[in-house]
Image (cartoon, helix red, strand yellow):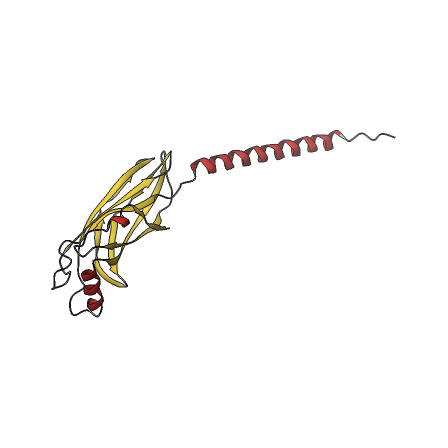
Length: 194
């Protein structure tokens, strides 16, 4: 014998089906929006670096440290707000220069921006423990250095800004005895940490 469902149960089944369909459609829409608006990390590469007169006998104190790091924003619809960029240069674990390097700026989507900065070296000096090794590398024409850039960034989609992210860029490279970036390290990609 055939049992018909009561109208209340049929109505409840219909409402559940409609609700489940709405949740499924909203989930698909949210997933597609998330995929299209998800920010991609910028890419950095060191294009130029110099410490003129690096080979002087009195050390690197007060020498200008100049660098250019190219930054590429791969996002099609997302711009990036950079707070001031601080720079530090290391020889091994020894800090040899640091300070503010680049003023705050906004980068348009799908664009490249050269970050040009200048710092003043604070070492090493002939009295530092690292000086003999540093002087030997300068004499050999290849000195290993590390440039670290730190900043706070926000991604911008139309009128909406994301929360702040702390960013660290780490570029390892070598300079010649004259203090200029060796050719094989030009445009070397830098590591990026968020």
